[in-house]
Image (cartoon, rainbow, N blue to C red; front, side, top):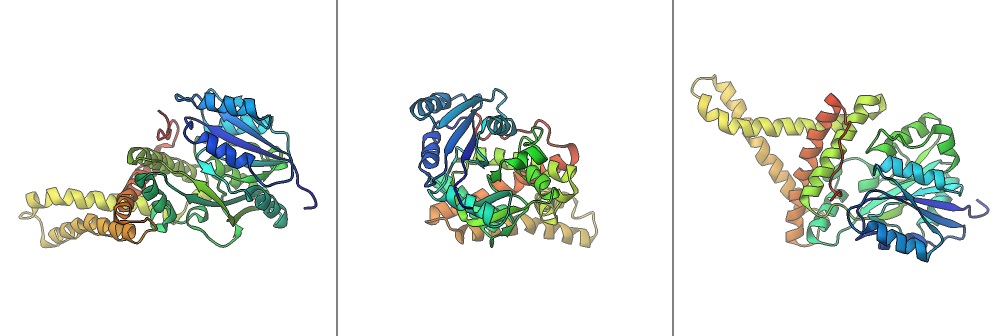
Length: 345
């Protein structure tokens, strides 16, 4: 790369008044010589997000606003891409903070490895004890499992990319975001990019500060929606199926059987064979073992202090079990109409 191509940042926004100014400041402060613009796609927020965005746009000509009345993320992204004027498209998030070298490093990696989409590490952070605990669960493989952008991995080709730094022409070739994918639209786009013979690349040096949900109810809603759309992916695409995605539903089933056995066994133990009683007793151990594993994982997590470690332990089942229930729903019935209400007020 002999010169710095122009960059268009695209940001979908909904109810982000508390985070928007900080997120935009990180973008405008990028140490990058090429031209920059930021296109903010405003959904129908119920807080004062629009006022914050308008104030920023009025004070800086690099910031432009587009309106997304339906509020869906893929629609917002497509509206912003359609308005973008530069050859590099960088997806950013109002709940994230990118380091000052993010753009320079990302564009260099894009050309260095010959990729058409580059993503980095979701470096979850928190401003409150609960949010910091949820962030610690993001960093743990016990929390979110395999994706490199959660727990880290060596640099290399990837199935999907967090956020994404794109060559503009890839959208003209494989199409824009699928607007029927209310979530997981990045995975589906990356699938089309890979199917077209292009690289999706993970660069762990691209660390994006991300603020997850800040309360457990919002985490449950997010987990359920994420599981449902992952089930939709597995339903639609053979490439979207993975054995690791079957583990949480099996765990949910086992926990359900174990809890049911606590109530059923006393009523039937005198009238069923001994091996049935043994199986019910064994099943009852499942919830206890799972709770113990969550506790140990929380105590060994990156959370600081016993209070936040215990909160992290509490966060794990609020990730696993709603996700598992959502995945079953998505596989059996599809995800149509499933919305993450965690940030909708």
